[in-house]
Every structure is written in C-alpha cells, then in structure tokens.
Amino acid sequence: MDENVWVVVATYLSYVGISVVLTVWVAQTLHKNGRVFLVEVFNGNEPLADSVNHLLVVGFYLINFGYVSLALKMSQYPENAAQGIESLSWKIGLVLLVLGGMHFMNLLIFQRIHRRPKFKNYPPVPRESVVS
Image 1 (cartoon, rainbow, N blue to C red):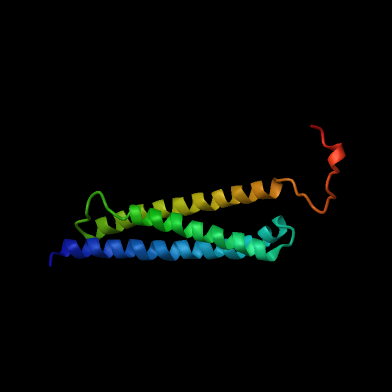
Image 2 (tube, helix red, strand yellow):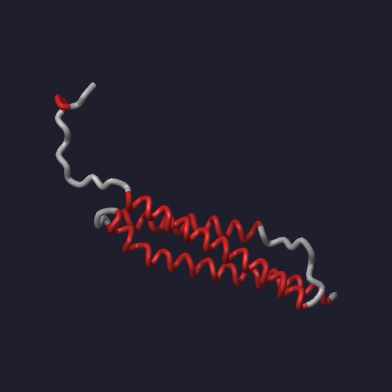
C-alpha cells in the first residue's frame, strides 16, 4: 500500500482520538464544576440541578461530536508525515476553538439563569387584587 494512504489514515485516527479525549475531558470538567453552581441556581434542588447538568453534558457531546464528524474530511490529503501533522494541528485547533466557544456559551447560559428573578415562598396573590 502507498505510504500516503497510511499518513491519511494515521491523521484521521489521530484527529478522532484526540478530539474524543478533549471533548470528554472538557465535558466532565464542566459537569463536575457546574453542579455546584446549578444547585445554587435551583435553590438547593439537587435532583433538578443534576438533571439539568446531565442534559447540558449530553447536548455538549452531541454538538461537539457532530462538529468533529462533519470536520473529518480533509480538503487536501497529506502526502507526508509533516503535512499530516499540519493537517492534524489545524483540525485539533478548530476543535479546541469549538470547545472553548461551547464553554463560554455554557457560562453565558449559567449567568442568565443565575440573574433571573427567584420566586421563593411568596403567598399567592388574592384574586381581588388582580387588575383586569
């Protein structure tokens, strides 16, 4: 088999492997450290915070693995190891930018959730006082 084929295959496998490891690491870090914040946002309701945290991680995986899959194809196949490393570097850099963007998007969502008004145990408003 031609040496170029092995360079292309090695580049693809490295890209997928590194992307999966990075995505899982970032997702687990966000899941672990985001829990405390979500418990506070949901007024100590741990089951709700854990549920939302899990859903955020699932969405994070879907978006990032979807991007990695769509970005798998190379516009030009590397002809040697140096070009393979350059292609890999470019693709991993894009994955890191997407992961960073997703991280900041999560922070923005958390901030908006945190800033929303909290309605604690206020008594219901009597019907007579409601303006029609």
